[in-house]
Structures are given as structure tokens and as C-alpha cells.
Length: 252
Image 1: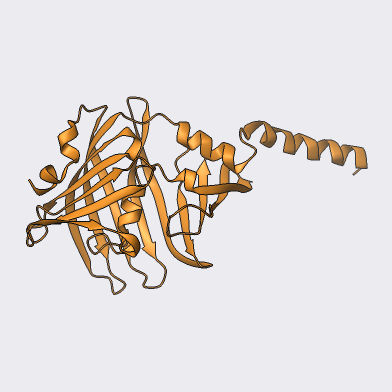
Image 2: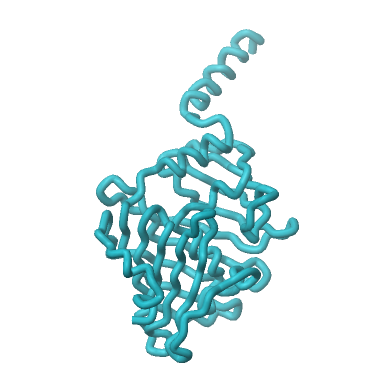
């Protein structure tokens, strides 16, 4: 094949891909993710299925309320009976950090989650308290973002490295983010160079112009256990009273 023809074919193959790629840096991708519209208030039902490394499974049901792109979040368990009434409250403080607390009916008191406890398991699941409070957003500013590559789709592969003055427990994340939804389909969580967990998001829904995740799975690498979250019964732009995000409501 003549060199000029080969070069022409190569450019013709590459040019459409270049046109399809909107973002050229990791920061641009994450800015686009953060710029996606989100409901002012969101109410949803959650079914959580926890599968141990040996294959045993238990299921839990919850109701969740969220406002201001995750600045305030409440989760209350509705089943089974042994966990019914337990709850989780996350409130963003003026400095941008989050204060997380749980309520356990058996103790009849609210307990604050502090320091290293943020990495403890969220009610026996593969999600930590930090993971749950971060699902609603608000954590991207804690990281520096680098675009590692662009896969067919296009799908952006972004590496996020924790800033020196930030406090997330994970020092590195690697995400795959499709341009059409700008919701990551896979997030790898690293600490001290070790891959700890992998979260996949393989279901979304479009409601009133909002793209919302419906099916998430977190897998712990060391144990092989996994936890799946199925979200449904969404109420978007719900008018949620401020007193929902209080210790009093958490104990109700």
C-alpha cells in the first residue's frame, strides 16, 4: 500500500474519534460530572443485598432523603426487624467536611462517627460510612484528576489522587466515566498502593432530566464479599423539611 494512502486511511480512522471526545483533561471530565443537574431534594427506596465471601446473603430495606447534592443525607432502615429503625445521618459542615452519625434503637442513642471509624463497615456491608456519605457527591474537590486514557464510547479513564490537605481515607481512585451519562461505571479504591474495593454502577434511569444510578455493587478484594444497592421509587425535586436532617428525626 502506498505510504500516502496508508496515512490517509489512518487519519480518516482517527479523526472521528477525536471529534467524539469532548474533554481533554481529567479535570474537565470531573467538572462535567459535577455540572450535571441534580435534584434539589431526592427521596428513594433502597434494597441492599450483602453477600459474604462464602456465598451467604442477607437483604435489608431502607428509605433515603437527600438535599443540596448530598450536603445533607438521611438513611433509615425499614426491614428486617433486627435492624428496623436504625439510621444514618450525614451533614456537611461549613468547612466542607461531613459529620456522620448513626442511631441504634437498642442503645436508644445517636453516636457520631469520627476519625478512623469513617472506614468502618456500614451496618455490615462492603460500603463504609465514608462511602455512603460520598455516594451523593461532594468529594471530587478532595482530589487532583488526571486523564489516563479514552476508551471506545468514548469512556474516560480518570485517575484521582488525594490532595495533601484533604481528608478522604482513599489516596487514589481510578474511574471509568462514559460521556453519554457522566456517571462512573467503575471506581477502584486504593490505599497505600493496594486495591481495596471496586464499585460498579451498571444501571441508571432518566427522571425529569436527571440521570440517577439505580444499581450499584461494591466488592471487597480481600474477602470476595460484595454488597449490591438497588434504588427505586424516586421522588425528584421533593420538598424535604429541614427537620428531616436532625438527630430527632433520626431517632423517630
